[in-house]
Image 1 (cartoon, helix red, strand yellow):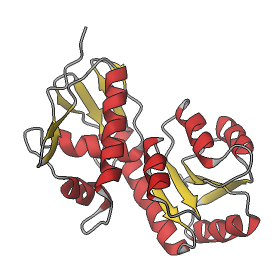
Image 2 (cartoon, rainbow, N blue to C red; image 1 turned 120 degrees about the vertical axis):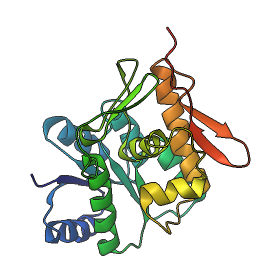
Image 3 (cartoon, rainbow, N blue to C red; image 1 turned 60 degrees about the horizontal axis):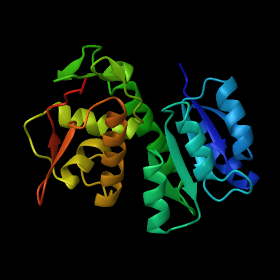
Length: 230
């Protein structure tokens, strides 16, 4: 089935460039000029990924992403003219899967979209589950539970946790995790990784577990016991 991408940007010229690149790559595309309309489209249609501008009037990209995250783990790529590290970190803390600054390469954007869609689909894994303690992950279905309690993870969060789960006794550095999730030689900042790990911990805490990810100071992180408190 062709993936359905929603472009949310108040600039029609940007939407046109992104639409052309995505459709040329064989993807289905819808557009919204503001966050309010985007939320309505997401509620009414089957959307697989959102490309979301931050600097929109009215409901901005951060507010729109926050509203999306209240309902779904739909992948979000932030698209912005800003190049401020605080904005980038906030974008990931709000549950964004990636961040592309304007001016951007349409080809690069398409590659990032495809990479997230592959991760979302499980990268070709079988439907078998991977478990540790009370943590159960089914890569092909993008399904995660803790003691039977569903944990709604974004694509990147799911991939990070799965990378730790596949080697539960191994300590992974931030750069090693970036290579596993974004590909070898990726330039993803350590603060970005920390933002995603913080989100995973918060969601696990909401499912009743404080022991999903352990920090090994000066080295990196590893999977914890993953026990869910009664």
